[in-house]
Length: 316
Ligand SMILES: Nc1nc2c(ncn2[C@@H]2O[C@H](COP(=O)(O)OP(=O)(O)OP(=O)(O)O)[C@@H](O)[C@H]2O)c(=O)[nH]1
Ligand SMILES: [Mg+2]
Ligand SMILES: [Zn+2]
Image (cartoon, rainbow, N blue to C red; front, side, top):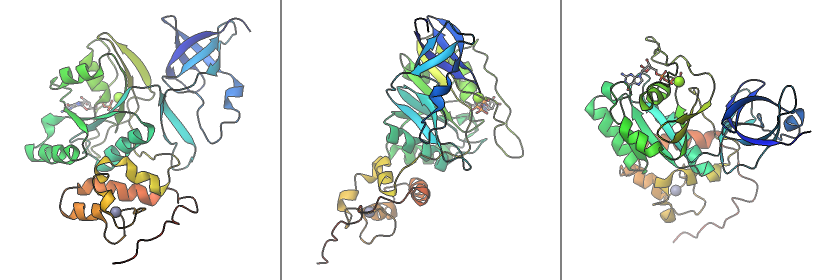
């Protein structure tokens, strides 16, 4: 083996990785050993990974994946329970959601925001296609996400509104754009950097959904000094391998109330004297957020035995 070289993965295809080494893109095939002992992980390499390649081989081989600073993962699919690593070593994630066409999905948005909390990745919500929204719809979404709170940027990728603000927020960092197909991730990138010419798709007029135009994740170096990963649109997002009791910590607005729940291990679902349920009734916690939480709670793995062995407080 000749001297190994270090690089960054810009894109993953089925069998080869596009690795940037000394400013050049090299195609490298991950060596077989990387696929051994994966322990439930689907892909050993992801966009953003720092890797070592052996340039002497034909094909060039990707030999090692260096330790990650962080990663974003999910359960691969409803048929595949393995962990799929979507990106590695990112500073922040932008959830790209359209207000309309496709219509805003609280469920999808909240799942991605929760995943960012889970992986310790700072998140920003980008509300795109504001040109298609009624003022009332925008106000409702503003109120919901201010109550979390989540930072929000409102954009219209087609007329450039909010794109300057997004550019400032991206500058100097490595970011991932993530969300539904057709929300406008690639259009926003084209607006951020005219000349990038990423392929954008039409929205199916019947289904009001995107057509999965972007088919692979790719890290782009933008001229104003930002690294941004464009990703294929997603349908569902499931956090991989999370227990029921770990979920509530991913909804920051619950934390303000849960000290006042009667049971210290309250799941804010069915328990009596739940302060989170009270806050929901008072309208202090957004109903759409709570519904997202409940749906994720139903899917989460049961807690390990022993978790519930907390003494119940005696009734007064
Ligand atoms: N009216 C309006 N249309 C927009 C806006 N942003 C994007 N679009 C349109 O939405 C469609 C889908 O945009 P894309 O950029 O391909 O969406 P994407 O999120 O990259 O979709 P995938 O690659 O399939 O995940 C295109 O027809 C865009 O012109 C916007 O702010 N307003
Ligand atoms: Mg796209
Ligand atoms: Zn509670």
